[in-house]
Image (tube, rainbow, N blue to C red; front, side):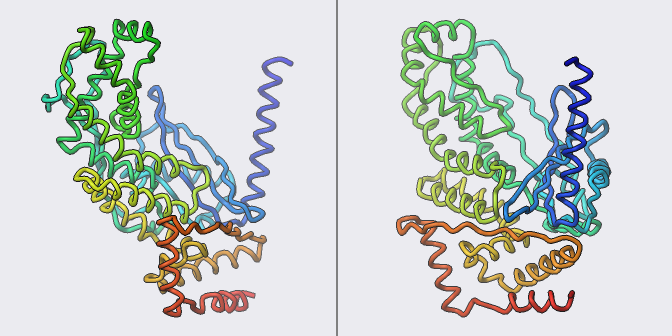
Length: 414
C-alpha cells in the first residue's frame, strides 16, 4: 500500500464519518463548544458539538479550522457559519455555546464588545539568579481579562452563552496569585526552580538520583501550583545544596511554609479544574465540583484562603445565574432543590426548551437523557446541603404544573 492510497482511504473514511454525523445531528437540539489554540504562529478554531443520542450524551468534533486572519468576533462567526453550513445545521438547532471569557468570543455571542490586550513579559533564562524572598520587582505579571458582559444571549443566534468554568476559575485564581505577598512567594519559588534546573545543578541532582523540579507557565496557575508542589518534595535536597554552597541564597523555614501554604490553598481549585475539563460535564456535576471546592478552601480557615474564596465568589455569579445552568439543575432530581428560589424563571426556560424539542420531534425523534441515580452519603457535606434544600422545597409545596404545561404544549403542537 503506497502513500497516495493511504491518503485516498483516509479521505474516504473522513467523508463517510462526516455524512454519518450529519445524519445523526439532523433536526437535533445541540450545544457547541468553541476554543482557539495557537501553536508555532498558527491559530486554529476548534468546534465541538454536544448532543443526545440513545439516552446518552455524545460529543464530536465538527471542525478544526485554521484562522488566517485576526481573531475577531466577526471572523469567528464567519468560520462557525461555514462549518454549520457544511453539516446542514441551522441556527435554530443551537441551544447553547460554551467558550472561554475572551472578549472576541463574548462579542461573537453578545451585542457589545470590550477590547482588551494582554502581555506577558517574563522570559526564560539559563542564568542562575540568587534566591531572594525580599525582591518584589521581578517583572512578574499574570494574565487576566476584563470583567465582561452580563447579557448572555446573542440576538442573532438566540442561544445561551456559557462561560467556560475552568477559565472563569482561572481568572479568580490569577487575581489571587497577583496579590503582592502571593506574587512574591511565587516569584521566589520560580527562582529556586530555575536555579535547580541549570545545567550544573541538574547534573548534581542526577548524581543524587533526583529529577529537576518542573517549571511553570506563569499564565496557567495550575502549572504554578504543580511547580511549587514539586519544589516542596525537594525541600531536603535543596537545603543540602544550599549548605554545601552548590546554590547560593537563603531560604528560611518561613519561606518554605509560605510555599507549602499556597500549595495547600490552591489544591482544591486545581482538583476542581481537572473535573471541569472532563469530556462530558453536566451542570449538576459542575455545581457539585464548584461547591465542594469552595467548602474545601473555606475549611483551610486562613487569611489567604478567605481571600481566594472571595475572588471565587466574585466570579461565580456569572456562571450560577445562567438560565441554561439553572434549567439543567432543575431537570436533574439530584440538584432540583438548588433552584427553588428561581423556580418561575426556570420553568419558563424549561417550557421554551420543551417547545423547541417538540417542534424538532415532528421531523425527527429526539431522545431525552436519563439522569443517573446516586447514593447519598450521610457524612458528605455537599450531599447534606442538597438534602436540606430538597426538604425545604418539598415542605414549601415546591412542585408545580410545568409537567402538565409541557403536555399541553405537546397537544397544541400536535
